[in-house]
Length: 329
Image (cartoon, rainbow, N blue to C red; front, top):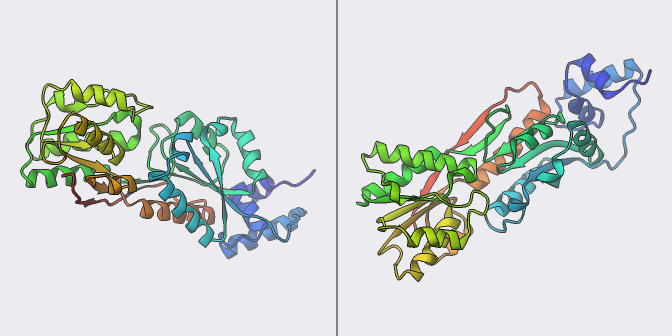
């Protein structure tokens, strides 16, 4: 009977992926583990044909929407790519809906492209992520969490970000504060909304339901006409809006200008992400900096460590945020 990598994995007590990496002499696997696997493979009569210039890849999976984002998510791509290369790997991009397949098919797909580990960037349907995780490769998610799936996650501290935002606005004398954005769009948006509500309570500020501009499309969340309709029908305008991100704040600033309202004189705006588009906006957007570079670097480091040691406990890493004060608030 032909000896397979699965047979070796069962004999040595490691994953099939670790066996594959060890037989290819990948340095990310600990030396003693590599030696054990190679010795076991020889004893079992397994013959591994290693090519001289074998490619080593890490797969990045994201939705079509995020793959087309030229600003915020591009900074993630660039940093992840650089960190992956620093570890001697290349990176391949997979669109999320192409991974809506049985785990065994995904396993074949990833093996065909020499994928050693996966990074999932941004929210994705949990049923698809479950299939991806079922392929058996070390996998890390960035910027989201899944309710019914245990998966290592890197995410910013959105609750602390909302706290810093409300503390800053309160100290500047703002009392009438609204919220803008659909919490159902993503994990980050929901955490920012929940954090906003908690921080308002913490600082003794009243939440006015009419200033919660959340009736926006959960997918096409930046639909200009719908946001415009919501803002124009408000019975009154608060002193400041906390927005789910800088994109939302930039859209709001444009609509307010059309309504003959000046930012920040008539209504101030505070966003999240500290993105390039927020920095380029006029006025520039005061924003919670979610430390994209730190998230991207930590995701690669965590993935590499999982590839080296597949017994690592699964963790959710929440990274610190800061407030970047600019012109809009």
